[in-house]
Length: 57
Ligand SMILES: [Zn+2]
Picture 1 (cartoon, rainbow, N blue to C red):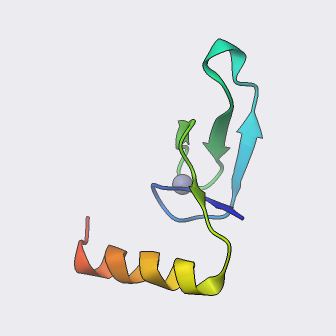
Picture 2 (cartoon, rainbow, N blue to C red):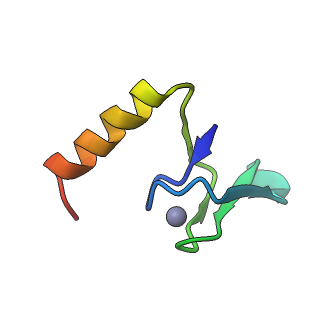
């Protein structure tokens, strides 16, 4: 599963990357970049939620 590193949304999709490699676009916040969060299970997602609470924006 892929998550947006900016807003943690799952609404992130690969777009044409050109010569720099795969680029992803977040539909929720407009984030665009090659780095996305890849999460295998709910435990990992909870860790990120916790991290987000410890360090609010
Ligand atoms: Zn986003």
